[in-house]
Length: 190
Image 1 (cartoon, rainbow, N blue to C red):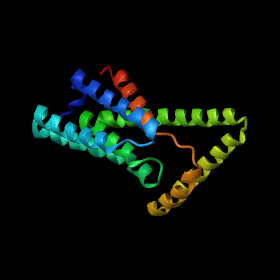
Image 2 (cartoon, rainbow, N blue to C red; image 1 turned 120 degrees about the vertical axis):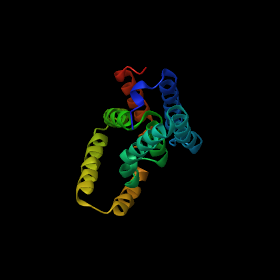
Image 3 (spheres, rainbow, N blue to C red; image 1 turned 45 degrees about the vertical axis):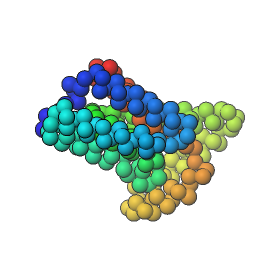
Image 4 (cartoon, rainbow, N blue to C red; image 1 turned 180 degrees about the horizontal axis):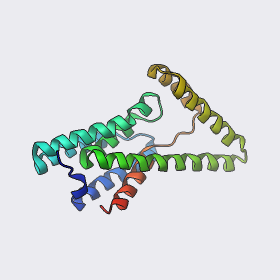
């Protein structure tokens, strides 16, 4: 199979960027990326590459989709993000292929970390209480310890679900969109 992502037409990259931006806005507003965006996004990527590149293109699209899905599956299973975020990133893979999806994931993870720190800082300043930041750091240590010691994903998911009502939520569609589009710019695709 040959890679089609580096030669992606500007229109394809622009379409993926717009889809990510729309999903990020909705995720920021509703804390959910809806299926009416994610499923057509994934399926249209498969169909586009089947038509444009034949079965080789479909194979690359399916591989990219699997990479996008696989990179976010564990965080989803343990309660770190919603299913819509996972399906959205599978759509990036379906359109852009495995290598670009992996790079976009790396940039998005860094963006997510920075946004999480900014969120904690903002909430601490707004509350005039630095214990918010301290509690967030302690929660981070606890979650990290659980990830390193508990091998049962179901147990991790139960622990995450119990913490969710008191957690600071970061709609992860936002860092996914920022990181993906930033990576497109870095590669010169936009």
